[in-house]
Length: 181
Image (cartoon, rainbow, N blue to C red; front, side, top):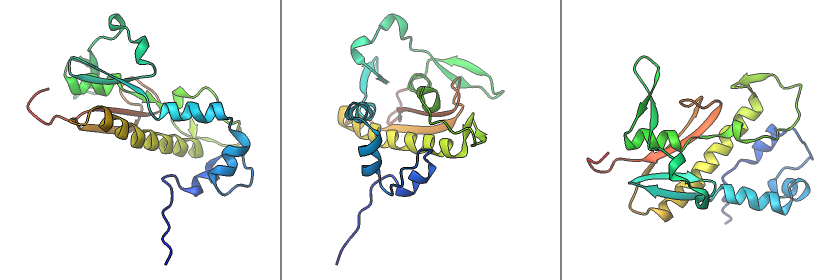
């Protein structure tokens, strides 16, 4: 008897792509349209650098470029009146500092003038692809955080227009396991 274990990303998501090379799987698509450098750079996105400062944990594109003068332990939180206010709680600082705006991150998009804007400046297809990308980043970053910080638990959030960022966003923070904040 054969058992099938499919990958984490549905082959149906290929139907959301603007570029259609007639492929029903990712290997042909990548083999035809993605260079080795591009593929390795994506793998780098899936395994970012992390730093721990005064009990706070943050991701950075390059931990070697960390500058404590530019990295204040201040966050933002939405007040009851929907106004953003500064906060020094670890959860709020990490939630704010760890925001990754998916659609603001990409400077290159497939040209699709016939696709109308659906949400946060994106077509329905690109919006779904941004969420798919955020879900996969979450999957890999959870694993990377668990390896780097095996004694800590993390909460992830994917949302539109998170705090002061626009579009589809991803963030994470440490779960409070004890009474410490």
